[in-house]
Every structure is written in structure tokens, then in C-alpha cells.
Amino acid sequence: MQEAPLFWLLPAGLFLLVFYTWPLLDVIRLSFTNASLIGGDYEYGFDSYRRLFRDPATMRSLQITLIFAGGSVLLKLTLGMLLALAIDAGVKRGLKGMVVVRTSILAAWVIPGVIVGVLWKLLLSTSSHGLLNYWISEAFGTSVPFLTDTRLALLTAILANVWRGVAFTMIILYAGLQKIPAELYEAARIDGANAWARFRYVTLPQLVPVVFVSLVLMTISGVNTFDLIVALTEGGPARATEVIGLSVYQQVFKFMNLGRGAAVAVLLLAINLLMTLVYLWLLRVNRQAD
Image 1: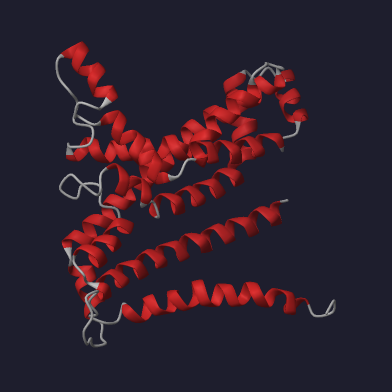
Image 2: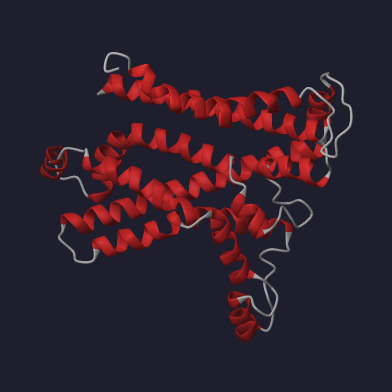
């Protein structure tokens, strides 16, 4: 048995085959059909894919997904970098409370997306139980339609996603900061470099591989966001926040179009595979650089 490690991998392999590989293959099969969730006979063909790329709603959903993921990535990277630099500086200076600060930031990351969506909905709702709008109404006599305005709703969803996920970016960047040799900073100080120059010419170049990896991981996370959106806006108003993952849900469970929903899911799978290949390529480049 000790000379046959594949034997010990057999249970995990069977688990993956039954609960992951087979459902995945079945989704791909269904994407070539006109199957309905209510049952009945169906035919095979490419009609689901032809309609998919001709459907303005699906293309709009893909556009919203790219805006949502892009906005989330940009803000997560910026805030994550600032937090990582601040915590790194605090630790190096021996400031107290750094562990508490890191724990507080990480707390949002471990909260499930559905709960985050519900919390932000309670906070920003224009109804009587909306906490933030209550204060705004008391101060200015009016409320802000964070969740009912088509533009503000998408921005609100992005901010909620950033609040939840910025901790992950901070962790990756903070780990990258620990790998930068202190000698580089000492040499820069001797040369008269100020804080901005040290960041631009020492910190940032050393963090480039870590930044690229975190960009790919954040993009994958943003493209696949579903739970937070469905709890916060349910894709509204007027489908303004209907990301591609929510589009799959709508096609299958609202319009009962199983084949069409499977085709959208395969499109999402293709995007994820592309981003995964980019991630693996970046890992290989980083290993070669090390």
C-alpha cells in the first residue's frame, strides 16, 4: 500500500468524479439542448449558443460583470495596498494593536456573501429600517436611492464587494512586503530617497509578481460573485446589477430555460478557465524569477 499512493487518492478521486466532474459534463451536455426545467422532450443543437450571443440581455449581463469585476479589482488593489503598507509600517515601528487591526479587517472576509448583502441592504435601504438613509434623511430631509437607482446600485454592489474582499488582497500584498529585503530600503535611504521614491523604485517593482497574481485571483472572484448580488439587489433595479452568475440563475429558475442557462454557465466556465490559465502562467513566471 505504501508503494501505491494512487490507492489513497481513490476516495478523493471518486468524490470529485461524482460531485464535480459528472455535473460539469452534464451542464456542458445540457448547453447543447433546448431542455426546460419543467421537463419534457428536448433536442440537441447549437440554438442555445446562437441565441446566447445574439441576446442583448446576456451581452448586457456580461458587460455589467466586467464593470463589476473591474471596479472591484481596482478598489481592492488600491485599498489593499494602502492597508498592507500601513500595517507593515505599524509592525516595523512596534505599534500596539496591529493584531487587532488585522483581525478587524479580516472579519469582513470570513462573513458569507449572502450575509454581507443582507447587512448592506439593511444599512442602505430607503425604507424605514435603512440606517444610513435614516441619518441622511434627518440631516438633509431626503434619502439617497443607493439600491433603487440604476447607476448607484451597481456602485453600491461594487463597494459592498470591496468591503468584503479587500482583506484577501491585503493579506497577499502584506506577505509580499515581508519578502522584500531590508537592505534595499537601507540603500535607498542612503541614496536620499524619500518615502514616495522608496515605494516607487523599491517596493512596487518587488511587488509586481504578487500584484499580478492577486489581480487574476480578484478578477476570478469578481466574475463569479453571485451570493452578495442576489441578497443585496437581486439583479435590480431594471437588471442593472445582473451579473453573469445571476443571469444563469434567472434563465434556469425564473424562465425555466435549462438549456439556455447551461449555455450561460459554460460561458462563465470558459472565462474562469482563461483566467486560471493566466494565473498558472504567472505562477510559473514567478517560480522562474525566484
